[in-house]
Amino acid sequence: MGKQTGACRKKARTPFSTHCWLNMSLYMVLLLISSLWLKDTACFACTFPAVDMEARPQAPAPHRSSFHDHVATAVGMSGSSSPRINAAHLKLRMAIEPMRASQGKSFGDQYYPEGKTEFIAECHMPTDRGMFRLRSYRYRGAKIVTRNGERVLEWTEMEPVVMVSGDLRGKEGVVVRVHDQCFTSEVLGSKRCDCKEQLDMALNYINQNSGAIIYMPQEGRGIGLANKIAAYQLQDNGLDTVDANRHLGFEDDERSYDCVPAILEDMGILSVQLVTNNPYKIQQLTDVGVKIDRTKPSLVEPNTYNVKYLRTKAARMSHSLKLDLTEDGEASSGLSFGSSSVKEAAASLAAGKLIVMIDQQRAFLLASAQTVSASALASMSRYTSGVLWAPLDKERQVKLKLTDAVSTMLLQSSGVAADSRLQTLHGLLNGTAETLELDGHILPVPVDVDTLKVEEVDKFQASLLLLRSAGLETVACMGELAPTSGEGRMEDLDAVYLARTSGFSVTSINDIRANAA
Image (cartoon, rainbow, N blue to C red; front, side):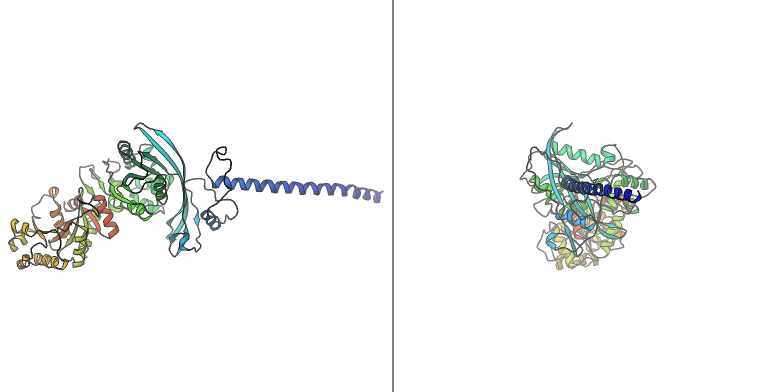
């Protein structure tokens, strides 16, 4: 019985085992086919924007750009599916492999692929101000940031939108504001900054005239909303906006504008008048290829809650701002870059460098007659109209026997060699009147700096106050900045941009007055 039972069990188990393995094999094949189909579908969904499949029955085959392939390889996600980014500011740190220069953007001695900007849709947008057109885009790319003292690439995704008024295609000099998202002021009504007011001013302007606002979802200068609130907490405890960002491990400004040239090109905008107070933004946009014809300031009256923030932007980030309140709530006027700008400008003058001094909507190049070189004077002639003044103290005026009539005769617009002008400056500085026979080199301007009222200081008096703060002789050389093209005077924000790109320090008469008070 035992053997028979065993035989029976063996015979009974054989057909059952065969069927079992066949069923399991068939099941595994079906499961593999299903998983492959789902994988391809997922790859397609995360690579392309949503489309109307009925309107486009013959959709292109799933495709990933070389950028996605490179990122996937770098972060260990190689395969057929793209890296999934669930939020605009979720970033993946990328390892970098050497690439040819033709394949992307430079990162030290290596290169990484360009980001990709896609147009998504356009619609009519009725508002309280009037009817606009709203265009949406999607950008995927990388930006260079500093993390723990190391320069690295971080992946970023965002969906910029553009508010448009008027027919802009094929136009030059289109008024454009590149505005960065500020949820706290634009939605919640926060008074800690001036972002909402600047957005409102830009919307009002383009509605009444024409232009575009490119709205960039880059909260908190690119660090995100949660981190921005953490920075606010640090500011509540005494840090300013710059130090708060640094304390959290971020750079002063982590925004990226790589998608802006592609957006302007897609809209057919050839060049822009950029609405901004930020010279760093001007430089960033210029670096990525945006053609900026000129700038337009966006000056907002400060309030008691944001005046410290605005002063920090002026002093530490070179913003051109109109600050009508001091930190104590007292009235002031004009543009300001902070007290540190006066110290920096004084040090530059002592080193023989040119500096930019701004007086309301006018801007001047300034040098010390004691330290300036002939090459610096040649640069001054190149950037200005050619008319150069030499503010000097009253004591030297008496010693040189200068009169207003003599000063007027010495005026000449251009065509004088820098060496000759330097000789004239030295003559004014040393009190050698015979040098002044060289008519046309410099226009001497006698200035009383001992009995002046600080609140009434003009550009000539301010120049001597700045020299005095640097411990220099009170003879200056200055000329009004001229625009690079056309006639007239250079706008103040253009002058700030010139200063930053040319290595000049920049300050304002308002700052010099405050420093002398």
